[in-house]
Image (cartoon, rainbow, N blue to C red; front, side):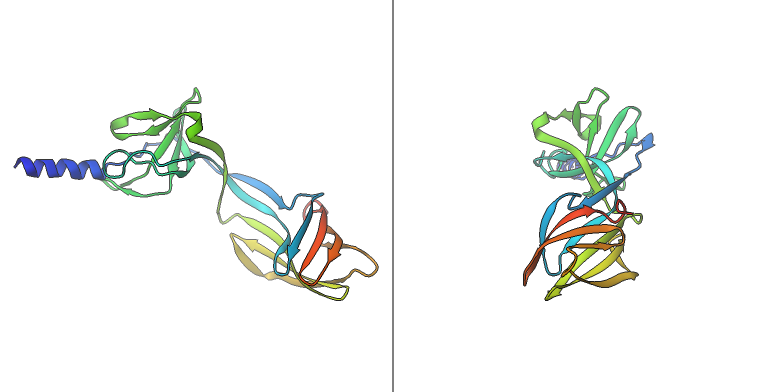
Length: 223
């Protein structure tokens, strides 16, 4: 009988490696603009690579845990990696790892909390917590893929003499939009600056494999 009770206790401990905090508020992701490379930057790309990528994506606050913490199946386990902010419990911010772990009722996730005073803790069993030193983690925004993501890209597809070839594509949620894929050619014998849908690029050097250029404006900023 004692062995049976001990076995149950071990299973409960294993199945309770993390807890899930009940939120009082959820946090929405922010829309973030990006352009690669930045305007005014000189860059070199090869055939098949994008000369310019511009768009919007959803960015989310996150805590990055530098190392694994705890032992899976023995203590509350927090794997190294990204913990995205999912909401608040009153004035405390709650961050959660994507790993799903089995619990006695449903599933639970490894979580980290940030208190109003700025201190950061691992969420342990039975509502306990462990303070993290600043050297054990970092904070930054991470890109969150959503259906609202949008990107414009101009790809270098090669050259024939002074004629340069490009392919313009638009992406929504990482999927190319068929109606917005266009091939274009430019002859740079008389003009080293090319313009396409607002994007302005100064061509500096072209060889058999690569092209060197400078971004003068982006698709949106050039309109």
